[in-house]
Image 1 (cartoon, helix red, strand yellow):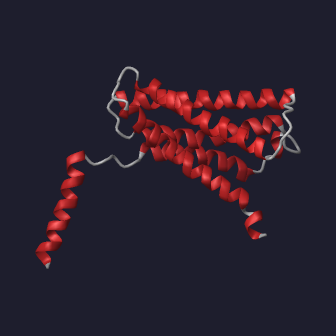
Image 2: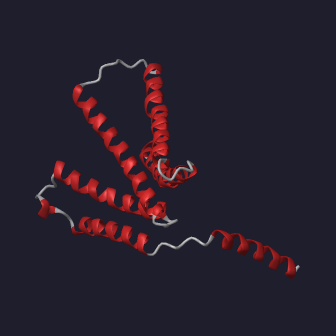
Image 3: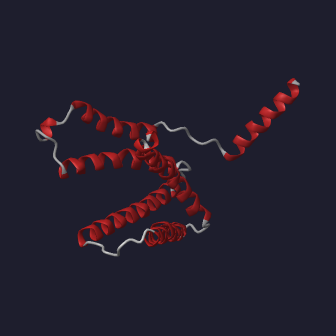
Length: 188
């Protein structure tokens, strides 16, 4: 029963890991296309293929296995479709942002872009949720801890981007590993 009460957290952490890796793999896929002009669009095409496999075929199979009815109420259908469109547009903006930053010679594009996204998205979510479901007592009823949390999310995103470590030059990272191995051999 403990597992059931924490299932939401396990799934949330699964999303943290997969979305945390998303920007890195998306950028590597874009660069891996070896096409500076169209690489991001080629990468986005395969994001769409992946979405089709995981978000169309897999749920269809589950619905068939479970013997679901095929009734899709209009409200749920349209809101879900809008959510999917927002997600796809967001993925496309991630690609455009990664490509623009990388084109400026910034090799840390995934760390910068994804830090801004993952700090900013919860703030947008919190504000829109407050608009859709206003707190008791109105905006004045917000606890100071909530407001500080929003400010900390913004500050955290800024600090991660501003003070992220720069990657070592490609040759230097290998040289340090080799030098370290040689040093331990000399001590033996």
